[in-house]
Length: 507
Image 1 (tube, rainbow, N blue to C red):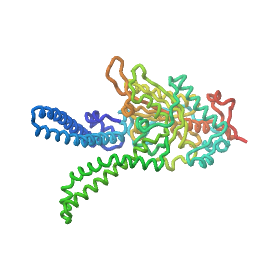
Image 2: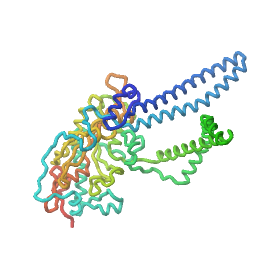
Image 3: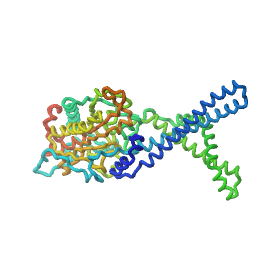
Image 4: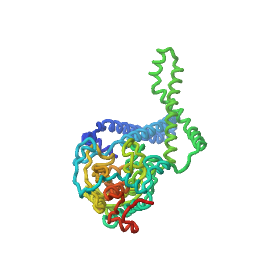
């Protein structure tokens, strides 16, 4: 999320950054909203200052025995009090409009990020490892798993629908072994602290890492408490009653604002002024009550809903939300292995078979929180930590730098690690490692205090998969498959497998 002050001071750089993402210029429209916000604040402040002054003048007039002047000043104070309510609402609305617009703006890519439109323009940084050679045609993971009797998509579909899977026996243990191995590696050798975070989070937590509001359709909402129809209607009627007088007054004010033009048009159609005024007020009331209804139901949803996490990045990064850290605490490095839940709203028709794109999957996440000066080096370090997983597993992979057209919403720069899948005969993403700068920190209000300074600065945040456990399982099945249909367990996982060295067909 961007600071409007920075945009005002650097409109050209801001629009150039958006253009690199293939977006139109936004500085003018955002600054116009900021001008409205400033004007509303100024109007409210001016009214408040005059109200304070007039209140003092009332006392002076009464002391001087000037009752007429005191009465006039009292009326002015009362009028200003009423006007302030309107001005303060204008201020709140202007601030909300600017915040909503800023929340939709993606992070600007660093200058070093390559130009491009989509994944086809991502340059390869390096390729590591040797692709395995087979004396037979390698199968895809779902063919292997189903033939072994250890992977069941049909029953999962009966239970939950498409994009779910049931793993059994040694295959379920192999998935668990992968997650344990990754956590042990990152905590014992890479300096990350293991965290067991909540899997359900609030709106503001999802907003902090930029899953909301833009990617709402990709998330799974859930509810803490059931909302009965009776409860909702009782609460609705209570709130509507409380707001009725305010809405009626605002409708009258809105009608006055455009009634002259309305009346001129009405007279041309033979309508009298009173009727025209009533029509104007009716329309204003309709709009205002509609606005109230929308606010009410949105409030109810926000009040009751929690979100299943799409990645542990969400709770791990938000560990520092609304905090001021000491510089000595940075860099902060945390990791977690959690289930992840994604609606995959934009993935219709893609990877419909197998485990590549699931609604529920397990992933080991790496998150770093650091200073601006350290963040670039930390990005390379995080990438190396994720790469180490694939090296230990003996899997061939490549690293690509995402181009400007393929970057995530919150990222300044992203590396993708793509593992070789012989069954598919191509590389597939298994980790994204992103530097977000202070983009998420601003949304979370996460700061640190540099040593010897009283002032605070926003932290920089980074995240990456270390790695996606489900896709690592896919890669192991396809790379370690044997001609007889069995799968050899990689040496590094043997300590976690309870003596199982090979996955074979169940009876």
